[in-house]
Length: 447
Image (cartoon, rainbow, N blue to C red; front, side, top):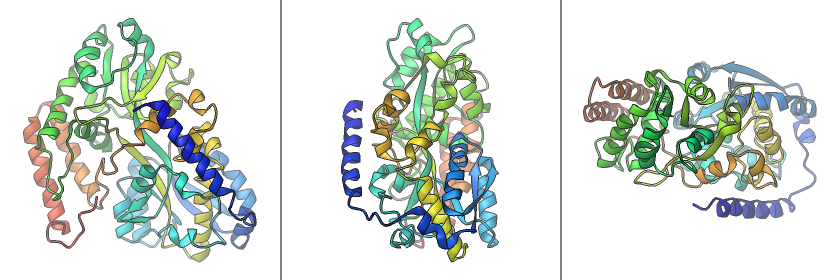
């Protein structure tokens, strides 16, 4: 895909959106909309990540303008789902749901969250400049949508990108990053692995990182997937087997112990100059280009993830915020106003500059953004053709991911063959789906 053409398309969309916004009512203001809810406290879970630090740093402006208090409860990612589920099941205090891409089906089907249309249809609450069309469609629908309904607005959004050490590549005789996974294996791998340095690191720790960042990353570019159109396992298909076997072969150019690498270890190995290339979330950009945290800050290059035989199918990840159904009327209104403000087109540039990754098309079309943030062209390209079901988004994923984590790790360690591991995952995955009612027709085949 031509990056200049892609950015040009985004810019054109932003111009159209801006034109539409000029017809919006000038009578609405955040201060007046929030006046009935001054003094209301909104409880929300945030993660220990830069995108949430950015919103918290911006928060005083919202609280001063509205009189609404936002109580942030910090959790590491690994605890966020369980803490929220327990709160919603018990009818607790959370007024906003923070929803990972793969939790949306669970939250929507359990009716823990409220459709966004409940608020966008209310002229007293809905900012005329909300401009839903300004969100990248893929991101809005994948992170905030379920079964044709939008529940949440995207926040802390990621795409997988190729981070590469330009200096190491040039020293090895390369004038740019690899375009394909085949090049990574057959050209860049041998040339960049020597003297204690490695060509590539693939974060593969036995948690969601194994499922999302390692296992799934190698399925889609080679034509594989978790499920076929009938919701049966597709892991023994030619494409899935090709991708998983490719992962095994590529391990020869990765650091020893790669199955214990989480994001922190992978980003650190790249930042210390021990690894020439990593495929990581766009949210780590600010870390690898910061001289205080990266020894290679001046050598960092960013590109889209490499293509496989099925094209470019980058990792897709991120979150949305949705209003919790358990909140009372005032809390729901206050929660919506906060979500609308935090994800607004007006705040997108500040959020970006403070370390967040907004899902607004218009901000990436603003003059100077692509030059200041070198990950932008690759990010915009990735968000054109990603796969919403990169990881299935239904309620059963938390169970299935544990199966993938166990057997995906055992594959990488050589304890089982790729075929045996894929067969076991598929059989156990189908058992979970059968028990949930997908094969009897009790549940729609939605992922």
